[in-house]
Length: 475
Ligand SMILES: Cc1cc2nc3c(=O)[nH]c(=O)nc-3n(C[C@H](O)[C@H](O)[C@H](O)COP(=O)(O)OP(=O)(O)OC[C@H]3O[C@@H](n4cnc5c(N)ncnc54)[C@H](O)[C@@H]3O)c2cc1C
Image (cartoon, rainbow, N blue to C red):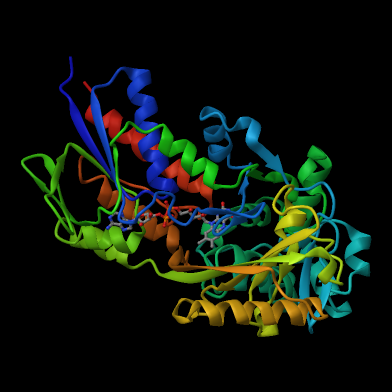
């Protein structure tokens, strides 16, 4: 019989919640004797995931969806009884617009993040100049790069597809996902698939075409993101947070509990809090942003703390607007708009939420959300809510034309929320993992490892839980 163990999870965002939930699942599965406590600094769990329910609108303040190609989120939803609540993106209007010279132009059908996969829609598209198109098509004959070291997304795209492809699509689409400057973003850490295509086939376009022919897959429709591979939850992302929280043991979650530092004494973790008495544990999962983990671990391991502190973050803000459909003259026949940095606008993207997913707005209304900030637009979180809302609304009026007013606007600010995967990021992460393995009973989880999306966070949380239990109950 093993002795009773205690595990503390720091941080109640999706990474920490998934870790705590996995601990509960494995405890039951393996009949383990373990107490689980989740410490969350804020007044609620969920971190950046939060859904507001207002007058029939389902308003995502943070993430609005997740991809299914990384299965952790989908699998978790099924395990907690949300399988039937998964909803696909709308079958219609699966297209992305790009703002160029103040005009909305649809990305050509079959255009996948940075490469065209259908000839005629690409050739006929007004998004690229003739010279830009020719340069992109030349990708099929551009020799592969011999060197294996990491490079920036900017360098990769310019090298293979030319500057126009970078400015007009790769920067807003891929840079947008990571809220990053493409000149600093690591292509190895963010788009390894394209590097692999170059390495194996000598051309991204050729590899994509081959993939499409072979699989005839559903995700190839539309343009921009592969919308067939994106899903959400009928009642919003909040239901994932609520579902997880409801499965944790009563009293396991301590809200308003900010961890100040952690150290090791006589083989146990000593967790000190900002307020109140500290706690002890046999195992510790830190599922807070890397700059927080860096501070917490400062006294334990300065090298690890330095490495964690070396990961930069960008801030962002989301402004949700409700409208009467009849007030907007421009047809909202796409899932949203991306805005290249060269356009020098205040928003970086906007989603037509009520077009993208069923049930986001009541009959006769539209829900639109605007994104501001990212590494190329620092300072958004210093703006007050009114300025952010006005700034986003002015942009919507400029882009959609006409004169209309919102029914409401809700501003959500996310300071230092998006880790920046700079060139060399994977080496840094491998160093961090190496240092963590030196500390028995310590695991880290979060969006700064090898993926910023919700499924990545769930995977890191669940892996941390599994590793920790394996360690604590081995032999
Ligand atoms: C605006 C926005 C939109 C996004 N959209 C999408 C999307 O559509 N799809 C997608 O897949 N991903 C999206 N992402 C990315 C993804 O949602 C996030 O990477 C993920 O939710 C982060 O979860 P986390 O638990 O790692 O961190 P967080 O959500 O930041 O949670 C960390 C938690 O730790 C707590 N904490 C911090 N310090 C301490 C401390 N000292 N003691 C105790 N607790 C502490 C915080 O209060 C917080 O609750 C989006 C992100 C943002 C910001």
